[in-house]
Image 1 (cartoon, rainbow, N blue to C red):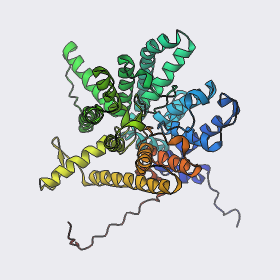
Image 2 (image 1 turned 180 degrees about the vertical axis):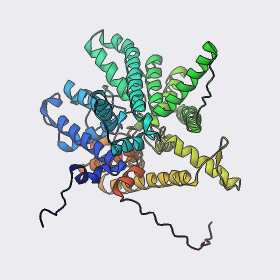
Image 3 (image 1 turned 90 degrees about the vertical axis):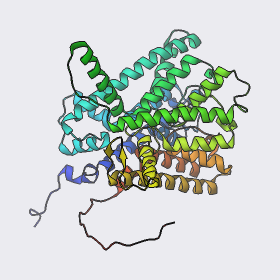
Length: 464
């Protein structure tokens, strides 16, 4: 009888993880967060050699891996150089994705990948052709390091003027380049970048790193491919039909609109208040920087707690939208926002099909966009409701904190340091959901879909 008993193979035992891409992504993030929490709990991770409480270590690790930037301990003063390096590496791992880095490392040593592993990576990168998978990952790693290296070199020029030429200026440059490109918002200054609000080069370098990180690798690759094709056509006459995809166009158009609109709206509401005593150049520069960072990154050159309530409401909308799908940014993504806006226009025009730039958008894609928005609002509502019970802060500060956590933005109205243990746990969960995405979380927790199609009679409902 025992001989007939089926012996489960190792990959069958772990099938709970490998058969579901969403589940694999979820547990890879959980693993790196837990590892980061342990490392940050060591006494030598802090300047005073005092152990960080596990909840604070968990909060910091989650915020770094989920590239959020909310902090319960001052990164600049609390952590030792070891702690800061750990945070920087967690940001890098979270921005790229621990699975991408693991896949790349395995590729370097020549490891062969199973079909299930490739399917998981294809899901994560939204690559339909698995033959291009390895090439895509190599390009992602290379372009990331190139952008961060170039950003570090430019930042070094500014930081060397402050710290002199040496290791400190070099470390500050690398840390902030990684934090900016990964849209993490962690800074090695207690006031973020408020002391640099009038520094044009610092503002532009950080802003460009944030923007590139929030566009997504797919969009950057597509733009570079089109530009290279045009260059080859001019130099050698070689003609290859290469166009911007509809996804790239939507991301670029809506990113531009949101950046410009955010700057103007911020200036309109704040030019008589927090911007009043600053020069006109600093006013527009500060407005632009806040517009760039509020959707994804979490750096700030102005005191967010002193903004007007109408400005705060607008900021929450932008944080909720976030950056592009497949980028290091959070939120429901500009791709989702673009589809929702276009579909609403279609309804107002009494049309049935959604056509964007001469492309038909599938009903399934539209449904996913609205589902993602609904799930995001549900997470924000639930988190806000819980925090109104556990915390003693004004409602607008609580909502702002929750939206910032969900959008993995990292801006705060000054309440993060004073959250209760329950409050910190709630924000940790919201940051985690915001980073991996509500749809991925649902996929991770769901069982295999049973394909059973039953057509029911149409039910007519009265709407409005």
